[in-house]
Length: 403
Ligand code: ADP
Ligand code: 3PG
Ligand code: MG
Image 1 (cartoon, protein in one colour):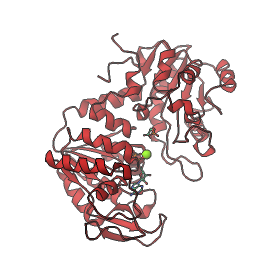
Image 2: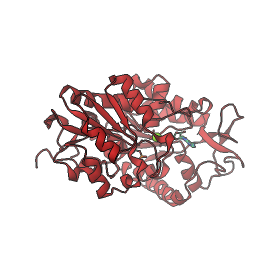
Image 3: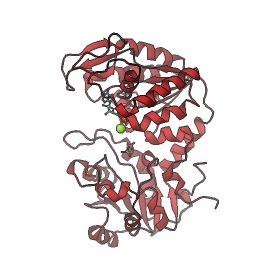
Image 4: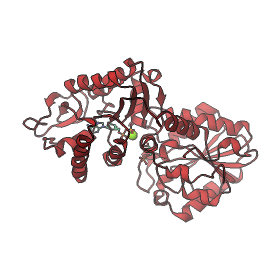
């Protein structure tokens, strides 16, 4: 259903100004350097296609969640520098995404050149899907291509609203590849179908579980999300990250999993610390009703027993979908759980393994295990929602192939 849309290859792009929505939401370190450029590299086939077909490219993206105002640490300037390294001196950066600076740059934009506009989310109208803002974005282009698969689950001005103001809106090559793979391979998954969920975007992902229960046989829960479930079971989580307003939903999900006879595994133990930084004392603590996370401590990774238990499940799975690191893997001391699951997936040579999510992919790459996975998706929330069978707004808004 998601794939019945116009493709980049259907467009006549020569001499046209093409607005290309990409997802350059890449992880940056404290020095503002790009830690993992996967999402940029994955956008290159579409960019090269447009360059080869004599288009003028205007790149649009967000980075992080700056909440509607300009903030230097969320600037796309590092992405502009990286694109220049990858493409050569054909890339120009404009320090806003609408307004006179953009108008000027678009007027002088030549074929074979690329203009990257500043973070869309520096304007609150982007996430509000404001029609006037969408129209202003559209004004710079003749055609629209959406290659931001990772953002396809957001109905924002640059992903949905904008398409009303341009004659044609097509999928980019990355968007097409992701849809083909995720819709195709997971339509009828080989069983057991195992889902590993972790990460920090708890409120985003917890709702997904309910719908994925209709497809998956086993869930392994880790990361910050686990503590909301543990709290729902009455286990002490102390300073661990819990979303209080999701505890009731977590309770319902635990009941539903039981009713459906789904294996729904929560961590049996965790690695706890008193402050989140390298080289602090750590404790491996059991997570039971009588002995949870000690007062003043917080869970930052799954524990040793959990790693073994989860690895057992991974070994017998035939389809594995993983979204969200199970610990704060950016700090090497807390990356052991995420690494052990990545190794267990790599060791299972019969399973189809799909890794999604910016941070999960970064982790797997850091461990040098990316080539051992069947498919690396650039989408986190987007890939989960697609697999659930949802129509993604960023795809729905594109021009139908067979009107
Ligand atoms: P993805 O990008 O793969 O979709 P998310 O963005 O949801 O994943 O989450 C990744 C983040 O979750 C990482 O930055 C990681 O540090 C954080 N995280 C993992 N486990 C915990 C935890 N126990 N407490 C706090 N943050 C965590
Ligand atoms: C992502 O990283 O999942 C996408 O870029 C979307 O980002 P968002 O969750 O901040 O909307
Ligand atoms: Mg992330």
